[in-house]
Image (cartoon, chains in turn blue, red):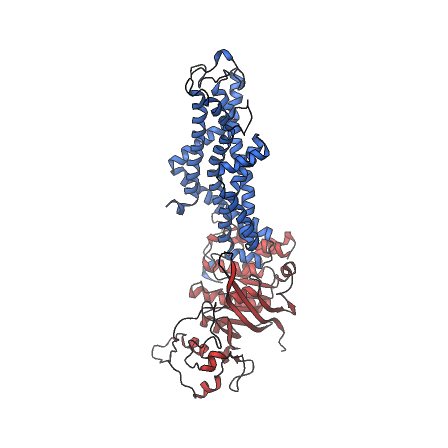
Length: 301
Length: 337
């Protein structure tokens, strides 16, 4: 009927925008050297968390909780790479075994907090009005507390254990997700194609999950990758205060606290867990920054 | 041929609250559409024209309950759409569809054409799932696209083609009334003509009724049977196409029509240039809303609101809302520029 339709060859190349935008994201991320290093480090930590304990128990006779009073508070050596603590336990082994706990707290709490926050944010942004006011004021209340204090209060109520730390850190991640998702939802729901599916009679459920959620995914991913660092830090902080995983679990925060007593005689007991916390948090932070720059180049400036 | 009423809008009001103050109370309203009534008969094309912000798009959206109307009735085949529940409304959405202005924003960029159309049919449960694919290809051909383009994504199409996809989506649920909200304004002039012709062909083929919302008088003149002129949330004149273009009664309609360019450089025409800006719909002027810009305005216009009425000079069905239509036509009143 018109010239605009006839010039396409039948064998046109298929381009999937999801795949295409992922490729573009990957290219941008790969260009960012720091983010790439962060990503590689995270990958290394994950592999270490899964394979490390297995390698150590298969090839050496070190165990994270094996005490040896004769070898207590030894400095780093060829045998004990990171030295030993006050019970003569090998710090390197404990750090490798503790990796899993750290990542577990980081990922799971952000996952839990993210899901709750995203749902609250979308509902708040989509329905608006009273629902929005109530949810967002609630989030303001949570935001009014300093993160660690809030987590501390929650763990104090629930009792100190790894699960409760995850719940506490998850709760304090909720408002950050809710706010960001609410904002993006507000802008996406004004688009005409949302009106078009509403005019077709689509249910709110369909609109929210099929049309809004995929289009607010990038800020969620950015927030999640940055949030993991905070979650790890808070988790370690709580463990440091004795509210997280209970001894003798090789939790880095708890190890840091133990090492505190021997700061002068054997600084390495506190140094290595502390260093590892810094390195892991740093890796997630620079990776998160890179993801943000790659997903949303406009935000960079 | 007896004309059958399809859509009857009565006293439709659409106010948008302005929240303000410490507790977010409603301090005022934007009166986007303020008490308008009109009827659309089956098979005709009715246009709403007016400048930006006069409430023409809002009217369309209120009819579809994309905004919940503040007050008034929207009767579709005798059922008041404004009062039925959301769930019941969902069934009626099958009969009323909308085509949007911006072909770039009106399709989800993450869906292929086929999945856009499939979703429309799925929501309204139009066809059994195994017959939908054939229907999709048929729809694409109907709107002038090719069946093999079904699995492409929106970004692979031009603006005109996307608008055709939007039309196909509206058609996919077999609607009776389609609201075209500035459906061609965003397109190139040559593509506009193609899309308008397509809309006309479809109207014939499927016995569609259009509510055509536009600011482009040339387009409106081409496609409409009847025209509604809106100003600041009110209908100022309503007439069939010929009466409106040849015998406009309301001073605003006259000014609007005088702005149509004439493709003849030698022709001298009287251009009525209105003073000032459209007043704010938050606090519309009392009396006739047009009095702040009307060259004929008197004290009566400032206090008394004119009703839509038919004067002796007008054909049946032609109504305008002005106190002084007769005097102006007779030349008894002089414009005060």
